[in-house]
Amino acid sequence: MRRYIDFYLSSMRISILSQIQYRVANYFYMIGMITEPVIYLVVWSTIANQQGGIVGGYTAGTFAAYYIVWTLVRNMNIVFTPFGWEWRIREGNLSMELMRPMHPIHNDIAYFSGWKFVVILLWLPLAVFLTWVFKPTFDITWMEALVFFIAIWGAYLIRTMLLSLLGMITFWTTRVSAIFELYFGFELILSGRLVPMTLMPQWVQNLSNYLPFKWTFFFPIETLVGAMSTQELWAGVGMQVLWITIGASFLSLVWRAAIKQFSAVGG
Amino acid sequence: MNTIKLAWTYMRIGMLNELQYRANFFIQLFQSAVAVGTGLIGLSLVFGQVDNLAGWSRGELLAVMGVHILMGGVIRSAIQPNMERLMNDVLNGTLDFALTKPADAQTLVSVREFRFWQLTDVVVGLVILVVAVTQLQAKMEALQIVAFVAALLMGAVLLYCVWLMVTSIAFWVIRVGDIVDLFQGLYAAGRWPVSVYPDWLRTGLTFLVPVAFAVTVPAEAMTNRLTGETMLFALGLTLLFVILARVVWLIGLRSYSGASA
Image 1 (cartoon, chains in turn red, green):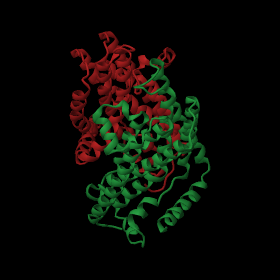
Image 2 (cartoon, rainbow over the protein chains, first blue to last red; image 1 turned 90 degrees about the vertical axis):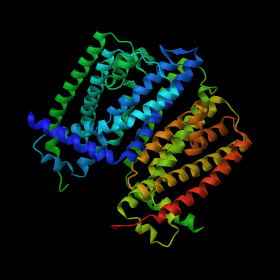
Image 3 (cartoon, rainbow over the protein chains, first blue to last red; image 1 turned 90 degrees about the horizontal axis):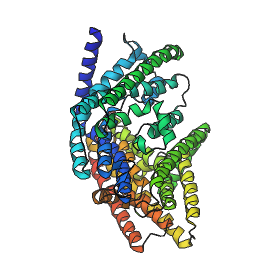
């Protein structure tokens, strides 16, 4: 255990130090990323205003709150991508990571969670700007804030598991980009990334209850923006833990089969 | 003349290369289908609530979506691959190989890559556009189609100029790979007509990253919204950007130091 904690802390420190060097590059990325929610926000607040101020329980102000929190949640959701897995398997770089005396997923998790500290730091001015421009309405209790803090890390872990599993398909076939795109399409619709789930048709909402996606976007955002009871808040965290456990179990299962498929020279 | 011959030669090489991998066509088609599917879902969510968005009807927004996908295909087949290669060349010092060739360097770095299968999106975008126009039951006049094609061409040139200028930043900053994300993010804003956006954003999408001229204006041509003034303005802006891009490129090139080729 001690060994893992040491490893995580060092990896996180390394990633913070190296990512802070690339502030400009990181900012390019973040500004590009922020246009996506701004588009959704503009479209939906236009609709809310056209409808007399409210649509599906959201006003222009709560839409603004939703999509501003979205930007932080989205940043937390960035994990080692399936395209990264594809590259690492195709180029044989995985060989090097197999030399380490622990599962490569630990390095991914540690490195990206260190990066989050840089990202959050860079995100703050953007959040201030968006708040100033779009005037969100917030009503946050300390309990919601606490659950939000836990939920964004829960979302991070769930998405790490899901995207790693997706990326590991590359062990069996190299034509993966179409599968990835399909996955991201489903995620967009079923996670609350496109619109709050409550604006979706009922059957889509029902479907999303049985899938992990909404626990990575909709739930963490709603902890701050919505009005959930204490019980609902913690039940949500419970669902996140459940999905992390399911994801991790699948990951170790698939990994054992996958690694037998792997052959590479060099790397 | 030489420029066209050069571009055509590289295009042919690119095509021959990609035609070896026919299965990629189906993958590309599938990806386009996913993109169209999510786009249509977005539209139907909007029109489940209202019957027009800031004065644009469903059919008109479908036309915007068609142009957006079409132009996206142009970017990903001809503009983005060249600029990504340029970024890598500056980073690795391999731009030497382009600079030492006896052709204009800007032309050369702009035509070296061509992704044939990405043109699938151009076709898909056109199909959507035709469906949209049929839905609108608008009669197409020859002049309208000419205006549309002209607007589309100017839009593509404008986007190329902006890409080139921003990629030229690589001469000073070196690591600019994330610019691709920046562009894709901003380009996504073209999914909706720019008149939807608040003033500050609309200004940015008109003059900084002219998504307005690349997508909204051609779509306006197809939906009877285009005025002669807008066209003239687009022409002026295009000429200005062509000159600006040339200047930025030349200044940037002076800072290039191929270290390791």
